[in-house]
Length: 325
Image (tube, rainbow, N blue to C red):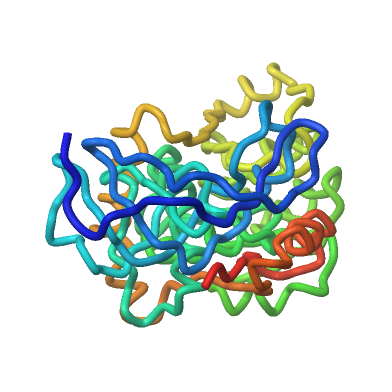
């Protein structure tokens, strides 16, 4: 295997993580190239809730980035050299990262490095969830935890897919303006156990056609009860917990479809399909300004540990980004 482009060698700055380990500064060798790989000089790395979970052996943290292509493997498009891209890969809190060629987007020209870094994970996840739900033009969509970074993107994706009405829920009203700015027609404030009550009241007892749920846990029964008969719930996030009981009798009586999505780096074709979908379905909206990642805060590379603690506190509207250079 040969690589084409600027030589990447030596060591690089990184932040490492692992079970029981807070983010720690270190140095590591520049990652090795692969045939399907694209080496990127990282400009910015966005944080995600997955960065908060214990994750095994010590490793370079982060998995979302923007930057400039320096090298391409034999199976990658040589025209990428020198291009500004964003994507998903393991180990993005570093000076350099090697990403699979299928897990890259050309960074839209109207997005800053921070905004580009905040784009790939949320938008591909929510597009995949919307496809799984089967959202169609003219439908009604409920987005739970609408003020979360994923929720704000889900609102925009549902709107871009032609939803006639998008309802967002939140536990507190302080972030309602951000949800309306993202495209929500209605913002409902309710604790998880009252969610179905307020949604049914807002829809004259009908419920919604589709739910993109970011709560999970014990809130799931209330989410299911918010749909029309024959509606669809897709579990995307688990802010209320990854485990919870579901009333299967209620699920059956209402003929509700309950599905769940989660996307990883393997197999690469799955994530690659979502990246292709972003180009086909969402890119025009990004370029027109209808669809846009929301960056809540940015931190210098030396302050990545503070950025992670800010994410853990949950006080920021939008993505938290670490500027690498």
